[in-house]
Image 1 (cartoon, one colour):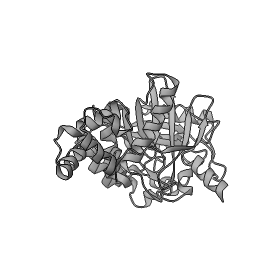
Image 2: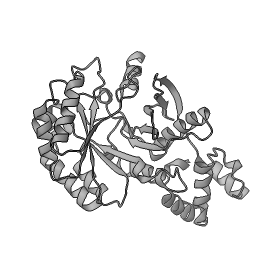
Image 3: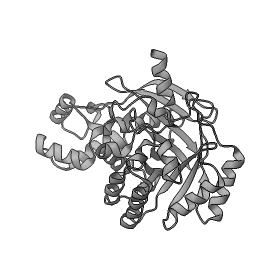
Image 4: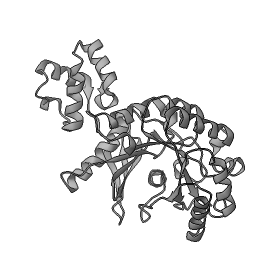
Length: 349
C-alpha cells in the first residue's frame, strides 16, 4: 500500500498515469486535497470519481505519525517524540521565532555519523525515514499550531534533527520539494534549510539540483585536528575536501552556505580558534552561526562561558566574517538533539 505523502507531484503523476491510467491533473487534485485542504479521508475528495476513490482507499493510505511523548518549554518550544508505523520513535521540534514557526525535522531513525558531542549518536541508525514520514513530522506540528489559532502554521523548516540528510538524499530532496511546491506546503525555498555534517559528494550533488533551498554545514572546528576528535566524518572527508566542496557549491548553485559551529568550553572556543576559522573560510561567502552547547550529562563536554562566546563572535566580526549567535530554545526540557529519544530508550531498559 502506498503512502500518498511519499510522493512529490512528478512521481505521483507518473504512478497514476502508468499504473492507474489516470490523467496527469489527477496528481494536482490529490495534492490540493491533502496539503491545501488537509483532508485525510479519500471519501471527502468530492471532485474525484467514486470508482477512483475506491481504488485510492484500496491501494493508498495517508499515514501521519502519532505523538508518543510531548514536552513544552516555558519559551513555547515543543519537542515531540513521534511513533511511526513500525514503532520507531523520532524526534521533531517546533521553535517560535519572531519571524515564524520553525520545524526541526529528523531524517533518520538514529544516526551513524558519530559526532562525539551529540546525543543522536547514542542510538545508531536503524533506518532512513521515508519522505512521507518526514512530511508527517510537519503535519503533526501544523495540527498543534492549528489548535492554538486558526491561521497558525509551520512557516520554516530545517532538516537538522536526528540523522544525516545527505545519507538519505533522495527521500530528503523529495521532502523539501513537497514543502516548496505551490500545491504542497507552499513554503518559500529560502525558508527551508538542509544541514549536513560534511558529506562532500552530497554537497556537490546538491549544488546541481537547481534549488534555492538553503544549505548548512555542521563544522564545529577550525582545523582537522580538533574536528577529527569531535566528528568521525572528518576522518573520511578532511577540511580541504570539505572546503573544496563548499566552493564548488557556491560557484555552481550561486548560493552561500551557513557554517554551524557549536562552542565547547576549552575545545574550540578560543580567540585563536576564531582567527583560524576566519582564515579557513576566507574567500567564501559563508556565514557562521555560533551555537551555545546544550550539555548532556553522559558526555564530558561543557558549555562555553558567555564571555568566550561573545569574544569569539567579536573576533570573527573583526576578521570580516558575518556571524551571529543562535537564539536558544527549550533549555528547560531535553533540548539537545536526540536527547529525548535516548532518554526514553534508557527508561525502557
